[in-house]
Length: 371
Ligand SMILES: Cc1cc2nc3c(=O)[nH]c(=O)nc-3n(C[C@H](O)[C@H](O)[C@H](O)COP(=O)(O)OP(=O)(O)OC[C@H]3O[C@@H](n4cnc5c(N)ncnc54)[C@H](O)[C@@H]3O)c2cc1C
Image 1: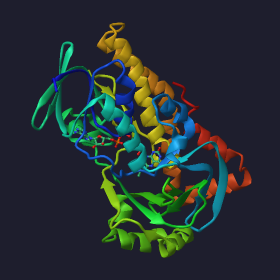
Image 2: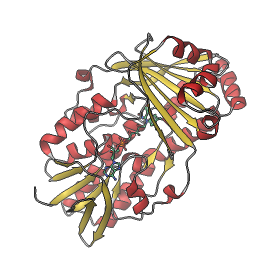
Image 3: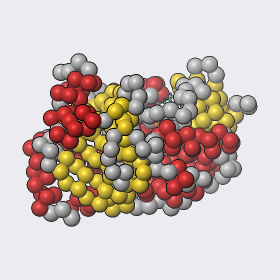
């Protein structure tokens, strides 16, 4: 393996793998990620249909991956009341185990992979250097796709990493009987839980809670019993669902919102550019979409049509144009959902004016992205 590449992608999650596949013709691409494939990842696993065509353009036919096809949304409150609504665009229930691995199988045939963690990046003139614990690699352009939070963010002294985040998330697959065409969002004190089927027929439970709400309890089981089960729908779920894994996946320190992507020499994509609140259910689609936007920009740069500062500025401008308002709506809805009084008011309004629900959902989603 020679050590100079056109592009090095730090992080081989959804955004990194999609960028790798898109850029591998005509460029020489290296992906660096410490993870094994396939692997489970923290995620609600509801994929918005807006990236169906984009994925297809790079060889991922979602229909062939046999996901659950999801057309309806249901939200329940702590007191058990519920509202259902059609999803304007719809989506797919597909595990990250399956989706990321499908992308990886294409990428591994076309790109080089190194199983390591990137610890530092340097930029000097036209050449950029990527440093891992044991080696270093050079390229014309680095793309950072390291997700929500990584040691690289610390090394690059990114602003968001200085602030402590109050959110933690838990995920687990269960055997449970629920309609395959529905995604459910259940509200509880300090957080909310998503339930939807994936391609195996398993039901994915993924919830987000504030650390303040969680810390009074010693462990996940007690929290689920004492807090989440106050919502009758979740109580019934926990009493009848059978866990399919030995233990859940749990992560903390999740920072939402936009991150600095402008005053830098590197291109940030996916969650490393910004993470929308998970209740919107389109972080994955956004991650793939950002990889597409970066692909267009970096292609022009490598073909000599732009300079690096112009490329970064164009990407940042496009990112804001496409995602800024969705991020804002996501943040407002999240604020409402963690306050019981506001949630009840929202419920009252939506039960009187049900046509508002699809309108709100549309505000946090995009139109289908064409290749
Ligand atoms: C609780 C929760 C629920 C969610 N539910 C949904 C949902 O239902 N639908 C939806 O669309 N979105 C959802 N999301 C958002 C979605 O999971 C993310 O937006 C998506 O995973 C972003 O992909 P990514 O490629 O940016 O990051 P990731 O998929 O996280 O990939 C990052 C990769 O970088 C690697 N990495 C990290 N550090 C380094 C390093 N130093 N060097 C090299 N590699 C590194 C990691 O190993 C990883 O493979 C949810 C998020 C959360 C937190």
